[in-house]
Image 1: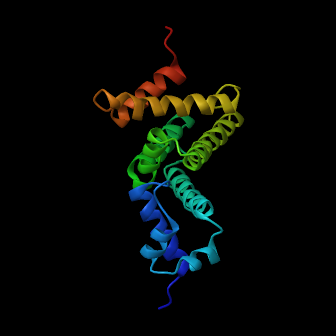
Image 2: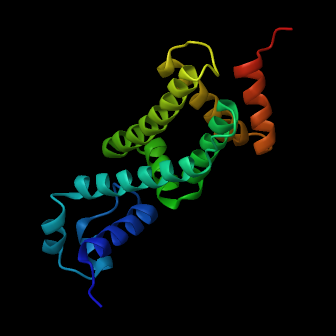
Image 3: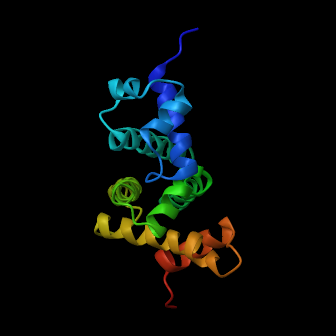
Length: 190
């Protein structure tokens, strides 16, 4: 059985970033965890930033794949967006690496982490924007600015999933779906 050194390095780096964060992870640590010489890492990655980017890019791809798996063409745009967003945000909340990176961004403001977390958010926004464009074409929703609509949908989900439960009992998936329907699709007026 051949050992894929690159995969071992990525696995070790992911583990280190998950435990210690980006700032406190060194290439020496990664080399020790991967059981390779530090020079071996540099045959695959130019620097820590490139290695980090590779890991976050794969995480984003996996998250989008998970979101696409819950999309059902028989369901409405509303239902699909809810299912996909909830899956992406659930994915983000459950993976140790993203949890650690959000903590580091909040607590230390590490520039490389801020860039990667913005990349993460942009990928979610682009995903939603594409779904909004498709819904407009199918006549499911009114003509609107897909970028602004994606931003509003995403921020409402963030608020309901993460911000709300900082000081209150978490909302259920059904509660969130109801609030999403009320505030975005139905509206408050009678």
